Image (cartoon, rainbow, N blue to C red; front, side, top):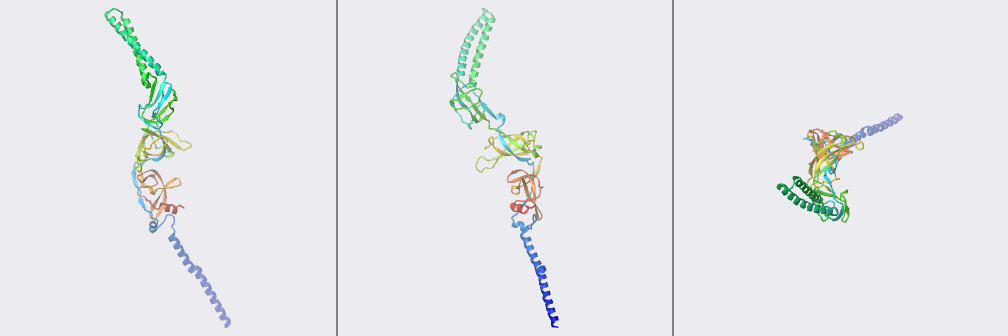
Length: 380
């Protein structure tokens, strides 16, 4: 009897141990695991999905994409240059020496402004020929007048009067030609001549110095007409087929005063290269554009190609577009989920980004909390 009691007691203890272990690992442990999982689920965010409370806590705000008409084809880099006819060389008509300079490089000049005074020998010789021609013209005029009078009185033949008139015209032509040469050279009979600006603009090169020589084969001065410029535009392959001569372009230049709004400067595409550059995979185009403060040859700018006005797209706040790698993205909301979507940004103005592809009108995009969304959707 005592033996049976001991066996029953041992069996009861074993059952208690087994029951406690089962409760520990399968009962209480399961509740604890579920509680920890719930905490983790509440504190963490599944990629793209979040509750209204989580959206509020992250400070994410959204707006709807708006439709815009006549969107630009795109914004591309360009280099400002001068059109070929805008650069004019000023040359000396005679060999000589510079005795005085009136301008420096970079100075703005008007058409006809004096650039330098030059002493030359040839104007002295031409001046002497002019004096002789004038004397001969005076003598020829007197002789022609006398013979014409005698021819009218019938004393001499008409042929002699005609010869005298021809000699007079020859002398007058010689006088006129010598005067024209001196006048065009800006020279006097003393041999001093003045080189003047052929156009209004800015002196881009001064290739002489006081006391230095000049000759007719070199240009002591070069003047640039800064009333218009040329844009050397690098078109990506995707835009090249849509760009044609005659399309409007626009460059935003800084305002003249500090803090002033940017000023749009308009222009027109004048040519598009027929082939693709194999190195850059781009097509070169040229546009003519007007002058503006800060516009100088060699400056790099961004050009917006306006196109023909047939393209449409959407506009969103510029803060909604973020750069990831080499592409532009926005975060689009659909109920309680956000997704990352690639877009094509063609222009930006007035705080708005103009998109040609990737969004539809009415799509809601995030305009704040962008950094947080990038981290949350990093795995997508």
